[in-house]
Every structure is written in C-alpha cells, then in structure tokens.
Amino acid sequence: MNTFLSWLGFDAQKHSVKVEMMAGLTTFLTMSYILAVNPIILSETGMDKGAVFSATVIAAMVATLVMAFYAKMPFALASGMGLNAFFAYTLVLVMGFSWQEALAAVFIEGIFFILLTIFKVREAIVSSIPMNLRYSISVGIGLFIAFIGLKNGGIIVVNESTATGLGPWTTNSILAACGILLGAILLVMKVRGALFYTILIMTVIGIPFGITKIPENFSILSLPASLGPVAFKMDFSRFLSLDIDYYIVIVTLLFMDLFDTIGTLIGTSTAAGMVDKKTGKVQNLSKSLMADAVGTTVGAICGTSIVTTYLESTTGIAAGGRTGLTAFTVAVLFFLSLFFSPIFLMIPSAATTSALFLVGVMMLRQIIYIDFIDFSESMPCFATILMIPFTASISEGIILGMLSYVIVKMCTGRHRELTAMMYILATFFILKYIAPLF
Image (cartoon, rainbow, N blue to C red; front, side, top):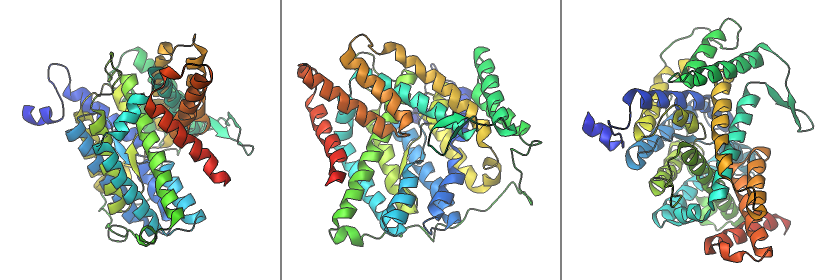
C-alpha cells in the first residue's frame, strides 16, 4: 500500500489519505457537470451523444491518471468548457468543417503540444511570466470561477444587452445562496470536507423543491455506451491537402489550449502554495503539461474535444489535496461514472455554486502579493484580473495582460526587465489580433 501511495507522491508524514480522497471527491463533484454538458454540446455537430459521454469519461480518466502517476499533482482533467463550444459551434456549425475534421485538428494540436512539452517550450513560456502577473492570473481565475458559480446558480444573469445583473430570487438561486453561506460557515468552523458536505446537503435539500431531479424509471446502474460511433473517426484530408484555413484552426486551438492550461496551472499552484518561493517555478510543471497534452491526444482518438486541466481542481486543493492521490481519486470516480452516471448527473448546478464561489474567495488572497505601487506592474496585473472574467477566457486575460506589460515596459524605458521569450510572445499576440483584419 505504501509503495502504491509513493507512486502518487504521497508521504504519510505530510499527507492524509482521508483528506486526499475527500479532496478528489470534492473536485469530481464540482466538475462532474461536464459529463452532462459535453455530450449535449458535441451532439449538436451530429456526434452520437451516448458515445460522446463514454469518450468524455475515458479521456478524462486517462489524462487524470497520467497527472496522478506521472506528475503526482492533485489536478483533474476533462474536456474543456469553452473549448468544446469552439469545437462545435465555431469549427463545425459556423466554419463548416465536419466533426471528423475537427477531431483531426484536435489530435494534431495534441501532438504539437506533446512536442512543445518535450522540448520544454511550454515550460519556458511559463517561466517568462513575471511573478506579479502570475499572482494576477490566480486572482482573475478566482473571480472567473466565482462568476461561473453565481451564473450557474441563477444568482446573477446575463441580460439581452450582454450586461450582468442580479437574477430573480427563485428556489434555485435561493438554494445556491444558502449553499454559499453554509459553506462559508463550515469553512470558518474548519470542518474538513466543508465544500463536499455543502454540495451533498444542497443536493439533498433540492429534491423536494424539484431542483435535484430524479428521473422516472431511475436506476442506479447503467451500462456504458459504445465508443464505436466516434472513436478513431478523425479525417485528416484537409490537413494533407494543405488547407490554409485548416492550419489556422490548428494554431488557434494551440493558443487557446496553451494559455488556458498555463493559466490554470499557475493560478491553482500559486493559490495552493505549490511553487518554489525563490524561483517561482510550479512544482512538476513539465509533467503536468505532458498530462494535459496526452489527454488532448487521447481525447481526439476516443472522440471528444480538447482535454485540459480543470479550474474546478481548485476546490479539491482548497479541501487539502496536494498529491496525485487526489487526482487518482477523481480518475476512479470518472470510471465509476460510466456505470453510475444517473447518480452523478443528478447533482444540480445550484449545489456546486458554493464550492466555486468560496474557492474564488480563497484565490483572491494572492492579490496582497501584487505590487500596486509600481504602475508598470499594477496596470497589466489589473488588466489581467479584469479581462479573465470579462472575456470569459483565461487565455485572453493572460494575453492582454502580458501584451500590456510588454508595451508599458518598452515605452517607459524599462525594456531590460523583459525576457526574450516575452518579446516573442508579444509578437505572436499582436499577430493574433491583427491577422483577422487582412
């Protein structure tokens, strides 16, 4: 048993099996919505919904196991929200690619990611991000996931003018608000597993109000759907025919996945204190990035969109998860979900609002480390913090923050504070924004 735990980076002197497993359960519960959402989104392209469910589970399980045993970190991975919408609504429904061609683009992007990770290009990019910006990424992500939680719980709504406002007080939003208060009280009382217990309690309370829906002919067990309709269905014809538009799609996917993953790893690791205080390096960064790259490649083979490190991993880290045992627990729960999907899919979004909101509060702590006296540091950091939730994109927030950082430093004679990698990245960022103009 001790040998097995050591493979996961677990040290009995420092860690607790109960805490790590509870952290894994908390992470899984807060991200399990992807099991319901991803099949719905990808089925819009004509993909078989049941097969996509199985593909989503298997890809998440494999990627998270790589994270557990290879990187030995507490992060969980699955098909990314936003990335799956880009796959379905932009690539297929708007640009006209078949879902088979879109899967091929995801697979190729995953291979590129593996190569970039092997040659430590991704690690070099992370190392080039100044510490103040890293703290701001963590704060921005905290605001973003709190926003997601409030929106999912119906506490805030997006109006027709795209502005946000306070939503109507319904049983759903009241349950979500009560969950936030209960979770806060349990955290103040230092109850271990506070986030998990809050999710569980809110799920049960939601039953008599019809928020937690128990379907007719409810069965605890269900047999997993076959992968046959979507697995190994990649179509590489566009890539082989040197289609420029297709290549642009691959590069776009590369950028989106790259900075979503980097932002999540930096934000969650910084918030959890899993960085070297002297160098600012994230623990086992290269191996964590490899788990992400392998997940994307395996996901395309199985028949699902880009697999990425999940923001909801912060809930498990907040619950005390620090080793691969947390990730391993998530992977096991993903496997069980193949057979117990009716139970996991019962958890309403209102029940997970508390976990997302309260983790956002925890991640806000990093703001005290940002240098707000030096305006050349504070302005780009503020831009990053705001643009992550306002654009609903971690990658856009990082790009705009880093670009403003480089421009301000260059225009004020402080170019020596910039690394060569930052100049290279700034050039790519500018090309990204001006390319659509031509």
